[in-house]
Image (tube, rainbow, N blue to C red; front, top):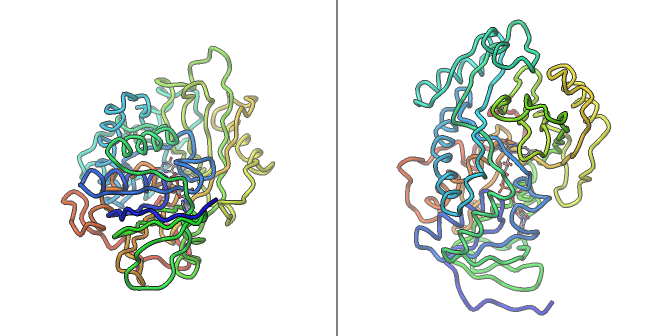
Length: 392
Ligand SMILES: Cc1cc2nc3c(=O)[nH]c(=O)nc-3n(C[C@H](O)[C@H](O)[C@H](O)COP(=O)(O)OP(=O)(O)OC[C@H]3O[C@@H](n4cnc5c(N)ncnc54)[C@H](O)[C@@H]3O)c2cc1C
């Protein structure tokens, strides 16, 4: 392809149109900046971490109150955007059920945080759980937390809606892969794989699991992309027990599995939250492994016995982009005064897209968001080279 240079200099170039980059571009444009948004493979593409069908939005985060508050801030912004584009179905208010066991510290801390933050929730006893959800097998020491306002974001389509809306407000979108910038100080432009150059006053690299490939020296040992496998099981014909309102979205804390009810007749979704092996997001195989299939079927038969013979109707393979702790990375590049790094969603970032975008836009423009004050959790300095997951 012939190389060319855009004559326009944008206020901000955002590289990566996953959930973080899309919302950052949207927030910046709404604040009055001129923005160009690039993606190598397309907004919420099949390789991206945001490219799944569905993602949970919940308020519970143990003692990590900042994430409860970010999530509470994000949900109305998601709903507002979906209303604006006439697609309210991109949020499904299924409710979210935490299935805990006696003495589980994370769940106990969640109760306290939810109460302090003033969000709606119910504490459920073992008896309540068994009465409400007879289709689930609970251990005798199980108890629950139910978040009635929470649910599921239809992820891939939600990001595409944000990008389309951002374009309506004036964001220029380009299907381009940015090359790693070189030098230091003030970056004037970036080159793309097609041979173009893009000039801007500031640059935001929101490249998700690709961040360690774009900045290998800086982030190679600080963001860990791990393979994650997801399964959709076909529910028996006419059986409403596995669809809303009978079945909420759930997180089974003892087994580290989570799942969603049958939405849009796609199937009953389950996934293991345990981090898989390190992978390359460009090249990893997207075919499910026999081990993960066996583990998912074993879990399903044990906890949802009516689905023990349910067929897998779809599988997806994605990657988490973990930081050492699970805290996001939203900070300036140490070598460039006008380059920002936005990522490290760590398997729980999707729901926070609107908050991450607002926070990142405020950092880039030198403002502070009253609702989302600067937090050292999101700094590069707190990102270690050893994984010690602390945020779930
Ligand atoms: C299986 C799975 C389940 C999850 N479940 C949940 C959940 O239930 N709830 C929740 O809140 N979160 C969840 N997450 C986490 C969440 O999906 C991610 O944290 C989030 O999507 C990350 O978004 P991102 O924008 O940082 O990255 P991505 O979505 O990966 O976007 C990065 C984009 O950058 C582009 N790009 C990369 N390099 C370049 C380049 N050089 N030039 C141009 N473009 C480039 C890519 O093409 C890509 O589109 C889950 C993640 C996975 C994988």
